[in-house]
Image (cartoon, rainbow over the protein chains, first blue to last red):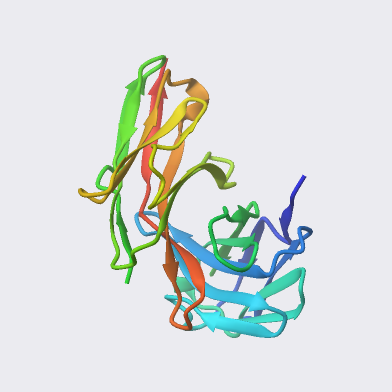
Length: 114
Length: 117
């Protein structure tokens, strides 16, 4: 079975803390994504990576950074967490090239910033 | 830019009945793809069905079908014979482009479907 694994299902952090959300996929996919999901807003793209060490900003990159040192791993970093970053974070991956395929999602990481 | 609109925040249906979840889209791309995902309360996103803009026939996958009306820019999901396990959030999505020209999925805000026994 294809698998996207997010390191933590639930996290509670304090304002100003540095937060790492890890995502690993075992499908040798080129593309990896970080989305944020909030009620009434759907899923919004934070960052996207189409190759190792390559990244692109999505629609809401402010306050976030990413790292992709290996093909299978894509990390989302909150340098200084704030309460408005309390949300569900979803990692996904897909094959590269002309995109007609589906995204494979992890189970999500629910982050609460106090 | 691509945009997906889901106008139904919530829908209710009786078990065994059919239900239609609305989705309209906006894009200037001549070639595009439309997706539906299901998200149960457990949180995982489950791919349901895909429709390419040049596909001649509406996509079907078991009890799911996509009513694709290109001129109206709509891609409604039809679930036949609803089951209690169909209760979930449903997201319509469209293939779009990032600022750098790569591809991404643009999601609607979702519709919460509740199936009543």
